[in-house]
Length: 433
Image (tube, rainbow, N blue to C red; front, side, top):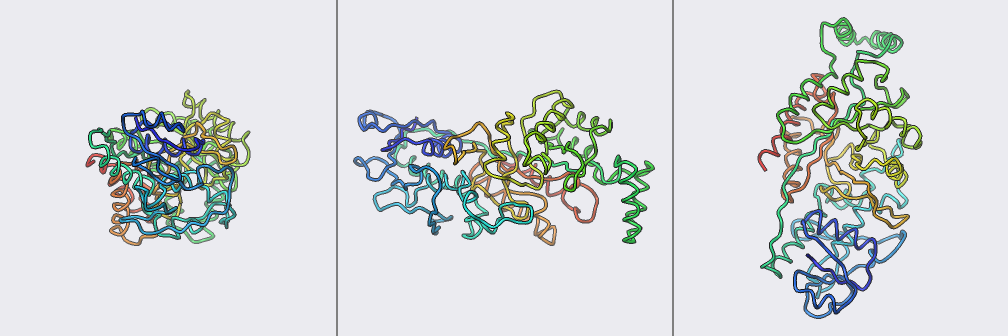
C-alpha cells in the first residue's frame, strides 16, 4: 500500500489520490499527517506537501487541494515530454508538475463552474475548455500523468510489484428515436408526408410508404444487427432508450405502443439497458423520476445508467438529481462535436461536488467519441485515422474506450455510410489488446 504524507488531509486530496493511484494504477493508498507514522512505514510511500521531510519521494503541492470553494486560477500549461502539464513544482520535486492538483482541476470540472460562454442549448462548449485551447484535448492527460508517477515509483521502489490493468471497450448506443417512419401515429405520419411533398423529397416519401406497408425495414431499425454484434462480443453494450413524453426536443415513440415496449424488452435480453433522460427532465427531477420508473417497469430491474439528451449538463444540479434518485452511472461527460477527453481521463471516476466538497456515489463514465464528431471528417479514411488515433491513446494507458453511437448510425442512410465499419473497428480493438 502507498502511504502519502501531507500536512493536511482534505476531501479533495483523498479524492484525487484515489483516482490517480487506485483507479488508474491499482495502488491502494492511505494518508497520514504524522511524521512518525510516515517514517515507520516500510513499504512504498511519498510526501505531498511544501517541503520534503528528508530524501523521500516528494511532489511539491499546489494549494488547490487544500482550498475550499472556487477561485479564479491562472493556469499556464507547458510541454512535458510527450504531453502537457500545469501547476509547476520545484527543483526538489520528483515530478515537474503537481499532477494531483491538475487532475483535480480536470476531474471536478472546475472550469465549468467558472463564468463561461454557453451554446444555444446552454451547454459548456469545447472552445471554452483549457484542454482545447492548449491542444491536449486529444490525450487522456490524467492517465498519462499517472503513468509518469508510476515510472518514478518503479525506479524508487523496484521490488514493489504493480498490478496491470487491461484496456476495455464500453460501447453506448443512444436511441432518441427507435423508428424513422413507423409507429409515429396518424398525425405525425400525415405531417411527415406533407413535409416530404412540400420539400419535393419524393424518394423519402416513396421509402416512407414502403416501410409503412411492410415492404421495407425502417431505416432506424438496426436492432437486429446490434443484437447480433452483441452476441459476438465478450463485453456488454449499454443501450439508452428515450422514454420521455413527446416534446419540441424529444420525439421518440410512446411507451403506450406495445411494439416499442417489446423492442426494449428484447434488447434488454442481450444488452444492458439505461435511460436517455429527456431534455425537459434536466431541470425537473419529477419528470426524470417518472421516466426512470417507466423504464424500470418495462425491464423489471433497477435503473443504473443515464445519459442526458443533447449531452447537456447543468453542474452540479444534473448530477445531484441522479444521486437523489439513486442512479449511480452517468454517460453524459463528453463533447458531441469533438473527439477528446472532456475531463482529461479515460477512466471512470466519481463525481466530486465542489459546492459541498464531497465525493459522491455517482460514477461518471466519460466518453471520448460520439458518432457526430466523426461526421466532420470527409472521407472514410479520415474518420478511420482519427478514430484509430483516439483508440491508440486510450490503449497506451490501458484505459476504457467509451464511444457513443446512435441506432441510426448503423442505417443505410447516406450520412451514416461506413459507420458500421467504424463501430466494428472499436469492438475489434478490444480483441487486439
